[in-house]
Image 1 (cartoon, rainbow, N blue to C red):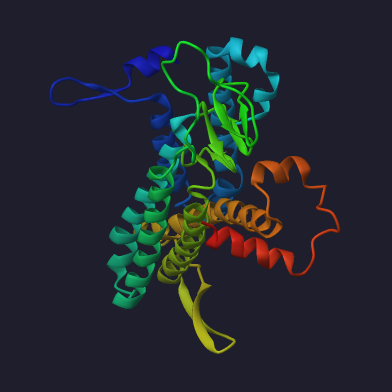
Image 2 (cartoon, rainbow, N blue to C red; image 1 turned 45 degrees about the vertical axis):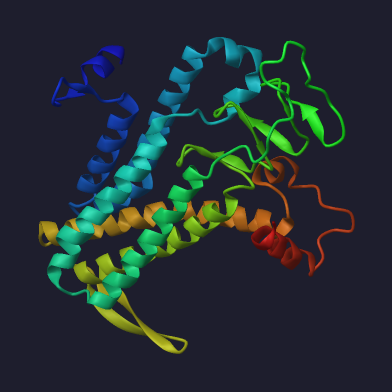
Length: 326
């Protein structure tokens, strides 16, 4: 693996550039699955229900074993880290490559059929742009959320525990009592929710609202893009839903009659696969928002509740405090 990683280079002015092995794995994973799922409905179902999850699991275990081997002393000292996901550029690269690949297929294969009007395209791209902007702000606004009271460069240690401050056992810095240490970022964050491996950043009180907003618009963009692609590759049908009508795919027997339709159908199924991940993350955030806890607290203490339980009024108060806190 070291030899492959060293030989994996691309021509570049001034000298060949080395491509990280985890980034190359993300590229191969996305291109391989979309191409494999464009042959028939049977291969599409097998690819996105078995092959792609298995491939990602194998890559995840390989990354975890590599990280554990390179940091053997750290993992030997704290074995609880073995249960956590390692930090790698593969997850973020996989997300970016997936987004670029889906948009490329959408504009070169789906739009080329001239079945999508300007208003539908504008609505879809608006959802995509808002989601990408929110996810960019999640990474751009990441910060500890507090200023440490300890004075750097002083000869005598002025780090002490008092009141709302404590000493972090990992970074040995004075931090608020509501702050927690992230082993991947090696930084303490105030009201830390979790470390998102797909964005390669920590979610805390500083950027959690951007994160939830990005998940919401991202889920809508993936579902709407899948609907536009499938109604283009398949024969659509109008269905009455409450006070409106929507276009849904009806007959998909000819979805793989040519490469344009097959790539559109495969990309749509890939969008549905991504939408499952996004919906799970969004449901987790909504549940934690209604209960007024952080995701890491909910995972370890989900069986415990506050005194008196959760009243009907309390979830609305928690939701209000989440969105309109100072």
